[in-house]
Amino acid sequence: MALVFLRSFTLLLLLSCFSASLFLCNAYYPLRHSHQHRPRFASHNYRDALTKSILFFEGQRSGRLPRSQRVTWRRDSGLSDGSAANVDLVGGYYDAGDNVKFGFPMAFTTTMLSWSVIEFGGLMKGELGNAKEAIRWASDYLLKATARPDTIYVQVGDANKDHKCWERPEDMDTPRSVYKIDRSNPGSDVAGETAAALAAASLVFRRSDPAYSRFLVRRAIRVFEFADKYRGSYSNGLKDVVCPFYCSFSGYQDELLWAAAWLHKATKNLAFLNYIQVNGQTLGAAEYDNTFGWDNKHAGARILLSKAFLVQNVQTLHDYKGHADNFICSVIPGASSAQYTPGGLLFKMSDDNMQYVTSTAFLLVTYAKYLTRAHVFVNCGGTTFTPSRLRNIAKKQVDYLLGDNPLRMSYMVGYGPRYPQRIHHRGSSLPSVASHPAKIQCSSGFDFMNSESPNPNIHVGAIVGGPDQHDRFPDQRSDYEQSEPSTYMNAPLVGTLAYLAHSFGQL
Image (tube, rainbow, N blue to C red; front, side):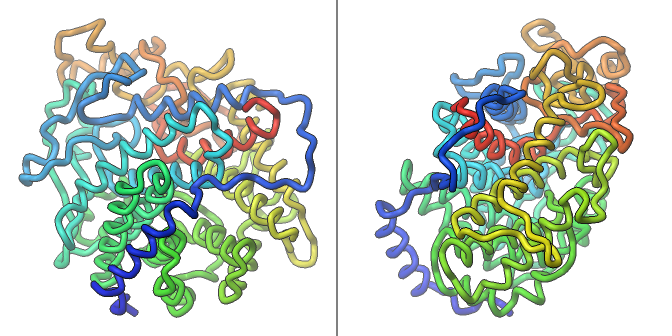
């Protein structure tokens, strides 16, 4: 059912209400615990990990770097991006260890960074400004990518050709091809995620930059209308471009529900609540899937919508408490069929498994926050679990990531005494421009890629794909499944680390 009732007069009413509420809303909701005592001892410095997890994003930047840039082994790159289509697409993030800008995971990264700040930004203290800068670097780019109505530029760079070279982003000379979705070639999945990202970011800046916040939410509404009206998966029209890298395996229904949930949260407009009520079931609200990441958003949407019922008492969304419980129950050790390694790490799949660890940990601490506010528990087939149990599960996952594992290896680069030395990342593995000003050609870079030497540039804060199902990690640069970092692995961890740092009195 298309969202036909949101038209110009509704939009004007929405924006006037949105403006009037600016000084009544606070994007950084405080935690309210039923206990007053913090644990006395933490096995990790969560505050240090938080700082580094945010710093990582500066090493992933594309475009003209600001004077405040702290990752000094990086330089300007991609300054002509978009010129192939006569549009400005300079900026944004490289998703992982290559030099391509993929819009789908970049939008999800933006949503999750924003959600981290919305829920836990009030605890971040000095890191809040850095987190907001990381969000704005992405949201500014998404505004450029959605500047033309009913069109979204969803990728810059030919991934197949890019992957045949091992070049610094500052040197890259592979085609900076531009790919888009539009009415003729829809992509409700990437468009829905982009709308969610813009809506979530609008909440982050609601108080600190009201004009920017209003601009973001206006664009989010327009992008959502496009996603809903012109339905289809972007993997169909752009299969040769986005697959096998970021195919939309789960379809687009989850992104439409996810985007509507974020727009309802950002605007409080009943049109979006009505959309969720009418379309929720057909968009998969009750489907039993227990993986949350850049492709499948159902679990995130359920947790987000459960807050409207648990905390804001929106009774028409009461079913989402049960939907959220079902997801949480699916990952509780001993109470589900979820797979964990012998060392205790949640294991979903061999390729970039740590992304599911960080996203699940975030949902656990966030849902625990909502449950605490509502004074309720999780119900798993008659067995109840407290918010404290959820937080403990999340903490164990983060502690494993930071070094409490059989290898005593931190999977965050630059944190702890032992961490990955040969991550699958072009900029990190090649000499910096400062140390090697001459251009490193496409094929010449593979000499560095195939080297056993540690990366010359320590990509502080980068989280790699992590160990296999037996807790093994070879630390090989060629092993992209286990050794490549990505923005969407870091984004949800930011919120979880802020919560843990605060809980142990480190913030």
